[in-house]
Length: 256
Length: 326
View 1 (spheres, rainbow over the protein chains, first blue to last red):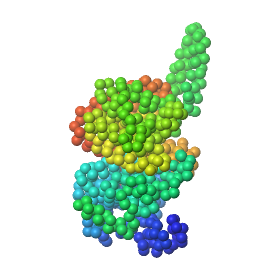
View 2: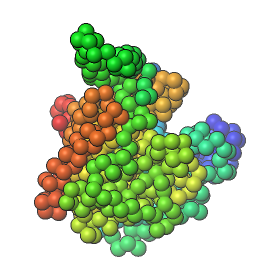
View 3: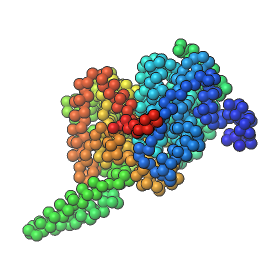
């Protein structure tokens, strides 16, 4: 494969040995939600919650392909039932509630299942007084195929986070490439502490939409983690190998 | 009158009626003919407007003569005292905020403003608010909560502004924060989609105790053009995308997203601002009457549950469709 950043030919296996980091330039490649669990949590501690939820097709949506068929194909391709994996596990012996969106499943977009899994996760974190970690990866934002129901998941998850906040919960949000649209504009940017992996694309409107609207070239590095750091929207850029210890340290500082 | 393409039969009849009236023929035959034509016009208008396609609904929602926030500010409220600025960056003209009186009730109104002529529309960024607009809305909502004023949000935007400055100033962040704070704001909130309910830009002032739509407005996860561009790779499929997205008031009522659909006058809101405004006023009055007497805890619990239950999915154990929205 070619590294999307440095364009050098690299072996996926070599990158996988380095947690999905390009051996040539250090660029952070895609990792699946399942691999992320292995990287972030203490071995064998993850317990999935609400894995039995399955997406439906309430609008009987059809573009070039019916949504129902698209779902089956995506499930087969990714081995996931939908774009979010949630549950509990340990990070350096600290119990946490953890949610991960997988940008491979319909662009990591949020429909009813993603919204419901995250909301239940946040509600359980509130009840059990657990630190909450959500790793976002979504190029799609709110999932078009479930229409307004997807849009409303943004409000639902945000409302659950507001209650969690009121109860004194600590929410660490980790942004990965890409975190866009309705995912950025809801849970991803609501962390008490917000981390981002280097060079991730993060923003509200897609670069193409912006370009088409303003008809100007976009500045170099626009909507990257580094751009957001400079403009004050994230706390730290964290390289993948350090993520686990950075999360553990933050939990310790916040006394959880 | 600016007619939409599908309104041609209405345009033809109105032209005929205009001609007949200008002849000032007072013979019994002429009077009868005029009466017939007028009842024909009413029938055809009702017929066309009772079966608008989703795409036609979008055209009506965007109609340039459709009442906008500032029209309702003068027609629904007895007074409007504009409060400008987000005390941080600027005063976004795509978002209007201020004190108002709904009969005897003091309220705070927030609304997107598109503008009618080219100059206004450019100044208002066609109703697409920047982060300062959402920040302004939030700061005025906090003010309202502090002094016990209920909040009314009038939603009418194609979407939040997509631009360099908007991203630099945290467009995603402010929309997220607005939903977060509105979900726990300690005062009643009533939201009405009056024209376009464009995605996150709409929802950024759209979390409330009551959510309603005007009959011919739409409320969508994405614009039909945007959806067509992504899924059909061509914005010309917007009409198809409009069908697929099921975003009309009727659909949203069925999906349990909106509490009420406010009926528009014959031929749409743009044909009769006064009647439209009086129906909106009636809805607002009724909603606030119910909400203002409610203890705050109960109000906030109901608001949480209102959004909490939205979503349609299957639980594998039962294999039954859980339509929590019903």
